[in-house]
Length: 236
Image (cartoon, rainbow, N blue to C red):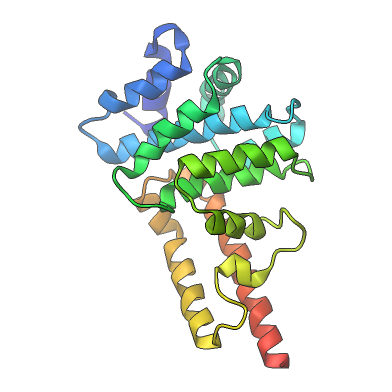
């Protein structure tokens, strides 16, 4: 059964179509296929949390819906299932914190700043900025999700800078290096970030191929930051 077929089957079989039941079912439905389980879990996390965040400022804009589809590219014949799950998340009375806590288990006993959870948060940033402005309630939403995901404050600020939420991103903050760091150290950090965010690495940690726009956007920010620092160092 294909990835999309399994996701559709999970939605259909959930008691009453409740999103909470769908999330709970992830514990047992894919026991024999952990890789598929991670892909489905990641997809549901994006759908559920993006639907909740889109309502954080009280208005769901067409730009936010478009941004959702930019990072969640699905076959035309599967869009109905994805839209159904998106609506369930918007209508569900359960708070987003419950879903975020369940999704934090995607890293098992992994430590803080887990990469797959960073992938999810990156996607949420993309949606939040889609209408050209990030509402304070959306910022609070993102910050709380980061806390639940055990993404540290410094790392959260790095993500915000990567998305230029606060204006033009600080290239040093985007790369997570000190402003006075030697260029060789900066280059080493840059190469590590590029390696960690290669599409093959994302797929290996459970990000479905349909979400690789996340990697492309992230790499563009990382490359742009390094090039900006390199130009400034050459001029100096």
